[in-house]
Image (cartoon, rainbow, N blue to C red; front, side, top):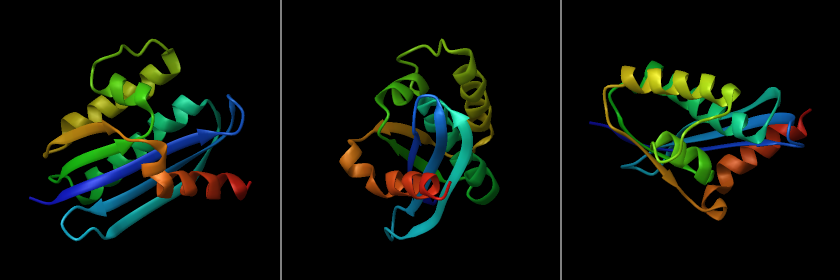
Length: 136
């Protein structure tokens, strides 16, 4: 079964403010990047951007690698802990995206793990966020 590492990041300039997402999908075996997403998502909060990055990555997975085992690597400790069930999602805007993510997870055939990484280890996804915001 294929294994992927997916680095995600979301950011806003202002909170709320213009937001973007960055996603880097890497084949675990070869270490090669197989897909990137850099996209503006409107005016939202930073946390909405973080969740939207994961949601968009899952959409790509369901269309392209539905059975892969996936390690999501994100630099938002809050979002990671919420997705792992350690913290509750109280914000209603986040809850909508959170529930959509949970639905997508139930449609996926492989295993999925969410791990928190340091910002320094998420530079490529972060640069995709900034690239999208710089185009506004």
